[in-house]
Image 1 (tube, helix red, strand yellow):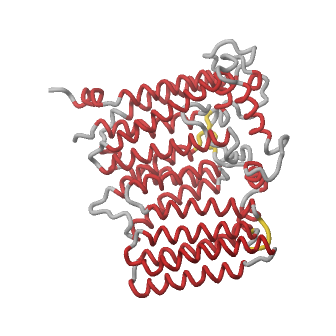
Image 2: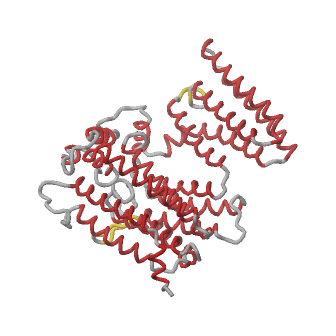
Image 3: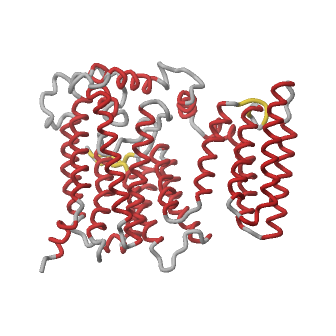
Length: 479
């Protein structure tokens, strides 16, 4: 009869481990390339970035395989304790962390710097999985959903207080997992509209709701389209659908008329929307369906949100954050200021061509033209020295890892393991999408690392813990 430890190694998903090893080694070589200078001879030199990263890789690998030896049900039992400990660590960080590049997110302990926000991700994933694993748990129960929101928003808020916006936004990745577990897609759509309305209000600022008539019409059509889609699949909404569809047509007609006669018909379109909402309210009173109530709340939220965009952008965001958003949206051109990082990043990646300039031959990175080129902008080194094929290979590695994690999550028999697995896949997906988008200039620069590639002890350790806990849970999937 085989021992429990032998079963761990036989059940361990070595495909995921292999992808992890390839990524870590590739990241190490690229950190050496990004930080290389002619005085630094060896990749093992501990006085350089690559040497220190090698040390952190060794620590991470030892830590990861040590996690495999812990009994799998301990992660369920101690999930809340881990979460509470990390929350307390985040609170302490706010008060004792020194100001480093405008944020207070690093705990400095001699030569070691610890970023608690990185470790809070796996702690939050464990806590959410533990809570959702409760007996007869229903996600859309108001009380349950409120608790999950608190579990997500508490660390997010504490990290925002540390002025670490990028790390805080990653916690929104948990909503992808919640969607898999039964959260209505309308909530994801609301989040998408929140971002879209914000961008429209900034790009088309003017005289109506703080935006131009074009921006207003676009938003009104989107709102009515949402209403129509919500009612199209609802059998009790037939009478309301016949009101919404003509309403959308009337708004489009009024938009065309306003452009031809140069007259703003904003009050007409608002009146049409008000009548539509009144019809929906009538059906809500008649049928008492929560779907009608959600539609009404969505419309009210959209209007109130549009009024508040200007306040949020000018009074909540820091000046440097405002500039980064404007640069990303193409509203201003600041190649020597806020847009310098992205501009140099594009030059570095573009100069790599198809096959790249060769390892250690990147001129942009060797001459230090790209700031943070071994941390947040490490992908520039890949693009410049290894070209399109190398950059594409890195993206394929991440795709293979994420697809594999989804496959592993789907085969779990235990809800705790499945929820945690999807949380891991969601967090990695968000990190990759935001980091690559930031580097190539389609997203604002918010400063988050590329998993397993960017330099940093906290980053490599936290991602290793995040991944290997799930691998340990997967080894016990048949229990």
